[in-house]
Figure 1 (cartoon, rainbow, N blue to C red):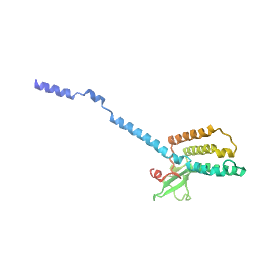
Figure 2 (cartoon, one colour):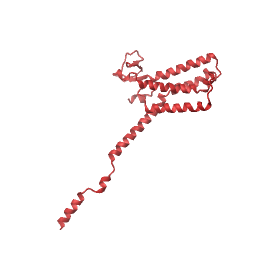
Figure 3 (cartoon, helix red, strand yellow):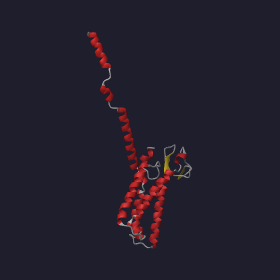
Figure 4 (tube, one colour):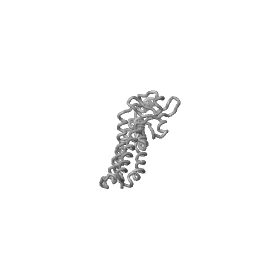
Length: 211
């Protein structure tokens, strides 16, 4: 009787318990956590580069010099011409900096250049080239980012009070206060969703070293 009881007890203990089927799936949980962390890091990385992708320095320069060039909105023909030239130069700088990139040579020195359809054109006359020049060629995404940067600048310039008064444009105050914020938010969102791989002029060294 004792042997039969011991055998029955051992056989029951070997049977799977009902609670075994409801144990938490730690593998799936860790995978979900890693995916969530990757998404958060991607978003934070994109937002950290907004100060570089957006024409912040150009807009700041335009804010400083626009009242001077327009004479606080009371400008003549010559001042109108100077303001237009300054706006064209500011727009060109937005496009130019969007096409710049950098690479490290075999000695570890950082070199800057401009992306072209055949590769990268360095500022030293192409005497030094990256290992794979094709990786630095101009892409459609670069044109997309340059267009966004240009739209951000033109929107800010078109909503500047002194510029509007200089060219005798009448725009409702509500439009001036609302449109730049909406367009800036949309452009910032697009920069986060479609980040740029360029490490051109204006990027901090830390961002360039983590390639």
